[in-house]
Amino acid sequence: MLSKPINMEEKKVIFGKRLKSVREMRGLSMAELSKKMNGMVTPQAIYKYEAGKMMPSGQVLSAFCVALETIPDFLFRPFEVSMENIEFRKKAKMTVKEKNMIIGEVKDGIERYCAIEDALGLTSKFDIDFSHTVVDSEDKVCELAAQLRKEWELGLGGICGVVNLLESHGVKVQEIEAGEDFDGLSGFANGCPVIILNKNYTPERKRFTALHELGHIVMTFPEGATPRQKESYCHLFANEVLIPSEIFAKLVGGTIGWHIHLRQFVDIQMMYGVSIDALMYKAKRLNLIPESRYVTLMKRKNADPAFKREVERSRTANERPSRFESLVYKALSAGLISETKAAYYLNINKSGVEQNFA
Image 1 (cartoon, rainbow, N blue to C red):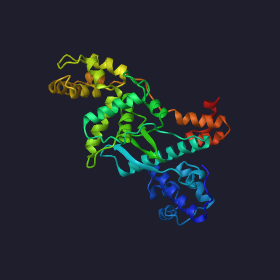
Image 2 (tube, rainbow, N blue to C red):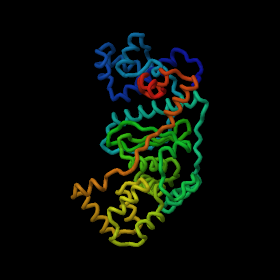
Image 3 (tube, rainbow, N blue to C red):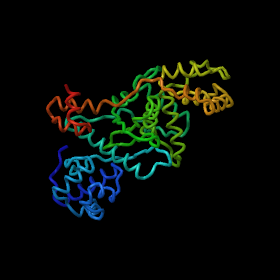
């Protein structure tokens, strides 16, 4: 991105913030970074650098880059992307350090995304606006899910590619390597919606999480709505977008009873890319199976390892974001960036770029 010239004091501030950002992204304390640099820089000096009070010498800068696995360009790059309204889905046991690592990686990835769009002269435009509707009931959630399907012309069938669908409608989607404690994240980068997924999850879980995060982006909740209520509504939104209740009811027979069995759920899972756990819960919510039947299924799942494996087995093709990578290679093909720069954007080595670009 083009930036106005910056003076030395501004450079100090930028370097300090970048240094702190990448240090936290690598999960290092100041003392740990100092140790990784063999004591070349003390923790006290690192604090002064991050506070924007000092500039590193060429030797120290090089050592920082080696220790933090980054490049000088990154440490002096002005901040031109702002993240707002971040909804962070994590388990309670995730530490502050782990959260900072994820936030740092997300911000870095989105900055690269916006930079490559800028190089190509592109802008993302999100084409859904439900801000006029306050979601204060499950019925409203279902109405918005149906409206989304209608506006995106999805019909009533299964969605073959949730991630690509979101990308085609102006959502920046990225994946990160994360543990079980991280579910997903959504927010806005320079006004554009962003969704971050856990690369290690099953396809069904990624699809559900992507639409859950979309719910956070498109739904307006009433004042006083609790985090638990918001999560519940976003769960319902994702479930309804993946498979509308009216279609699900027809597929399972439409009447309450004990007759719904695992094989039926497997068939629906394969058609709609929804986990069996989510389908069983949907059957209970719609009173297609009695509460007692749902409890029986859950108890069996917890007690019978073979049954649990069948319930949790993924039967859906994997999905991954592709737009950002495609834009990088498009910029490379157009001569707008070098192979070295492409490798930086994609966070891979130059030989990987050469192999993929052949």
